[in-house]
Length: 458
Image 1 (cartoon, helix red, strand yellow):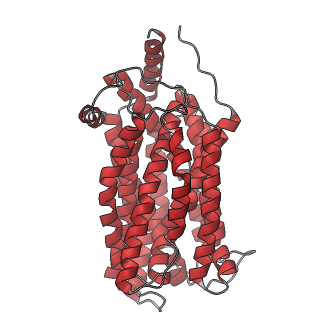
Image 2 (cartoon, rainbow, N blue to C red):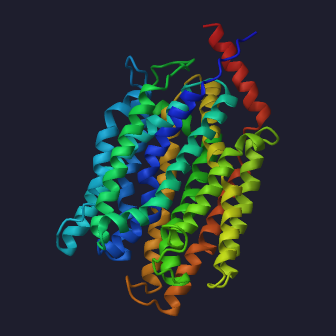
Image 3 (spheres, helix red, strand yellow):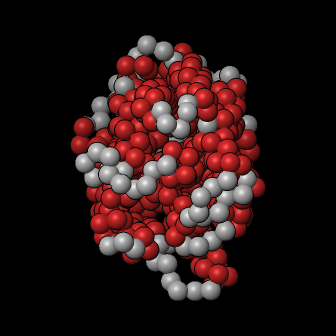
């Protein structure tokens, strides 16, 4: 009989979760405000921003799997993955701040600066976030504990997103004194310090416990071969692309939707919130409640079935926005809060599924490549974000968007489509892919038992 793994403490789960809060101080800022910052504050053309998002992903095509392979082969007294939280935290924070420095340059100089700083930041994000993500797969061998750990992670992640939604607009207005340039600079400096501190807290308060059960000497070609033969991972890879494209398109045009379509003039509508900030804040609160509800759902239904049903309802909620008149703001809030609550459990579920895919690879091929699996998954997510950001930028240009002027009917129609029907379409594509996911809950539990038995005999 195999021993039951010790449950993780609340402190360790919370410490792990804070690592994604640290990530989201920049990640969610990029998702929601970066296209707006580059077009309306930094002064770049929307089409140029869209093209930049695609070209900078060429680096990720190389660095993501390489980082995963490097992390899987790292051996230190702190483990394989934790050391990167210590080593990369400061460069990550500094580069995130430099993206918003807004130096006085020519138009071409600004574009070069944006390429360089954004590419460097994405490299730092890769170097710290892939080991961080893989860490979840080795903190416990229990799929139940990993699902709980993933829930903590995404409650904290969307807690960071909530702070971004709540604070970026008020902080940049308060600290900028009328200058969006100065406001973004000071806001991102604060976020950088907080992010660095949180990553270091995660490093000191987490532990790695799961060791590989198979051959540690396989080469890179073999590892990639195992990855491509891991059907569970292949499905999740495409789900990541479609899901994050949906997220990037919708988040990227949220500020435009409220500024130009709804008519948010930046004045306070509740406490220190303008309409845009209040909309994003209420949605993020609903998503956090959804993430916190993950155990309720996973105790009753399998992860695969939940991903399909919850993602389908989320797609329908986004599509419903297309039919809401611009003056029905209260109805927009109701639909958004409902949709974001419904989709809330899905990030925690899907990252627990990546850990299951790592177990499946260990079980089937006798080779555990946890960081490679998470890095390739993250590459899929970043491809989705790049595709979504590019689609948003290119489509804004196609529909005739011009920054800081009254928009034409065609431009407003394009913004409306990008906020509603376009992300809903990508969400439906991710639902279709999930139908091919092979690991049902009974198989996941059997794999867990088999791996525990295998380790007990070695």
